[in-house]
Amino acid sequence: MAPRPEVAAFLDGPGRALAFPDPPPEIGTAECAELLTRLRAPRPALPPTRSLWQVRDKAIEGPGGALTLRIYASGPPGGVGAAPGHGGGRPLLVYLHGGGWVMGDLAMHDATCRALAALADCVVLSVDYRLAPEHPHPAALDDTLAALAWARANAAALGVDATRIAVGGSSAGGNLAAAVALRMRDEAARAPARATAAPAPPPLAAQLLLYPVLDSRMATASITEFGAGHLLDRAQLAFYWDAYAPLATVDRTAPQLSPAHAATLAGLPPAVVLSAEHDPLRDEAEQYAARLRGDGVRVELRRARGQIHGFLALFQGDPEVERLLARVAADLVRLLG
View 1 (cartoon, rainbow, N blue to C red):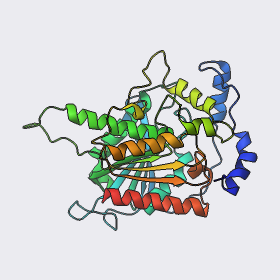
View 2: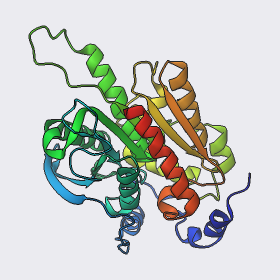
View 3: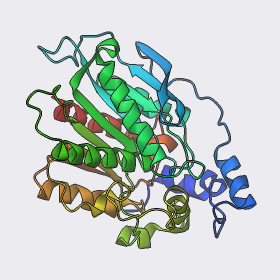
């Protein structure tokens, strides 16, 4: 299937202005600093796409200093999303933005977070994690875990049900979400018996992986097919990996960097996985979904026909994108109960 007409028009027009230099600069050079400055330049503020009961920022103490969270609440405690017997708390989605671990911010994914909060009738907690290359792995992962721990400790004040917390994100944020799910599963398995100790925190209830990056090998057929001319290209992916996970200091095959390398996915929370047909990352998302299902994890997999990587942010407000967001939100609601 060819790209949707509006996608093709974007690639032939505005998308060209977003193209990376070919080849990308080496990490740490003056050219790299100039590129990062351009990528991180503030974008014009867009009007809110949806009105919510509450949208507010909260600064907490993170591993690297102040960590900003943006809280989106669809309504006061109680309501449609509240589970009987759980104090009227809504589900919570801890959301990690995309941007190759080197760019992106709370504003960039504001529309997506508003949509998920409204459509899933939940609270969304968007995390402004530290960026590479100034803060390489595991900084972003540590910030995510700190945000999750804060959310659990403050569940009552947030009006959420601590037993229905999901983690999710798009692109690099999807990588962080999958990595957090793996880390929490493994830590729970290693924990000693808690006969007299305080009870362990409840496991994650779901994971939401929106066109995630999951495999540092970059060897799938979709990377070969769509690795040039589709906004996100192979050289750009390699730049992101070099910035986030320098080969000299980390093992990129570790599951907390490349979740696709995990020996087993059994015991992970149920997942909603969204891929885009013309995305270099399509195959690793769909292969991960197949592995989850094969290891006994419930999975809702959707492929966005005719779309490219990052389409949720690029084409916000498009009726087809809105319909797909509604389906993804409904999938998440089913998993959260």
